[in-house]
Image (cartoon, rainbow, N blue to C red; front, side):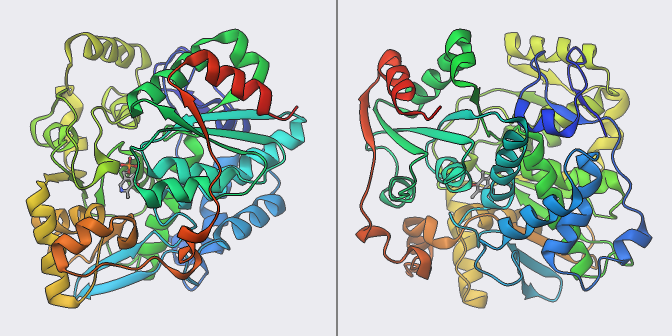
Length: 464
Ligand SMILES: *Cc1c(COP(=O)(O)O)cnc(C)c1O
């Protein structure tokens, strides 16, 4: 199994290199040269198996022999052992043909744990085999930071530094990061905005001397292994509801297009799924793309679903690669044009095929609140604003009422208690493992918005 860059000018890599490399040297994203085949016979064999068994089986071909099967199975078991539900990602039936898949039973209560809990272990494993260490530096406006810290804590080959804007993340979000007592975890509260934090991280990656000295790395949403780990729950959900004998639909609240691209991957592997429904908030560049065959940048505005407040969905490039018939040079030209003009029109010859595979709807904050309230009234269920967008998009855009549909629930309602309370009058409680979050000691370092001070801190604190 080899991976190639969407811009066609970086070397093809094997799984272990693609895991550690992130972005290609040509600025492209890595994708499999060919999708592994998941034939109906193989899908039927997954019936009745646990999530851990399905995960090990579905992901195995992506490793290309670079990680021993027994080691990988142990990592998968360990990663999903951190989830607080026996089914890992349980399905909850809403009505005769609509299900919610709860992807939020991991340590930080958001779906990012599903991929990151495994990716942290894969990183550690590959680095130890190579006798290397890395320094991971990232910026967060909330959710991603805690999921990355939980995934990398206590791993021998990793030091992780997460920058957040001081006083500008919620109390729950900050405490989820700052109460981790591990010696390889460093929280930096920057006296500045999220953009300041992100600019500093970019500057660190552009400082090649620093980058090489600390072996700088990132576990951001373009990392291939995250997509790979997310393919699993599409397969597991479809199998639970009758695949391969029955076609299943999915609806996905989307920001960076990472989650929904994994669904596209499952389809490319052979899983029979209905057109993937994409839910956006007011930052609706994806919905506009799928409805108009053209993408145009506008500003980002804050919404009730902050994890989807995104201007350009980075993982969309992986789908565009197929739209450009896997012609890396043509896509590179289109992306460079897009950067200049803020506009990209989908190629006409291929649009017809891809368009059939997706549907999209955008919701305002008011519609999001209404969706949360409506579900609560009908069923008594509390859901978070991101999950509500997926659910409402499913109901608005599904084409065949006889095909069962799974709406992916991406965050626990207690992660967004204010919005849930506004919609339903109920304030969701944190699950038991976080119930004492407010009593745990916090640990963070406050630094000025000054690149050199951040650099000095990383150099002084990292382990050799
Ligand atoms: C990150 C996130 C999303 C968006 O996922 P993408 O893969 O970026 O599309 C949706 N909901 C929640 C709760 C998230 O944390």
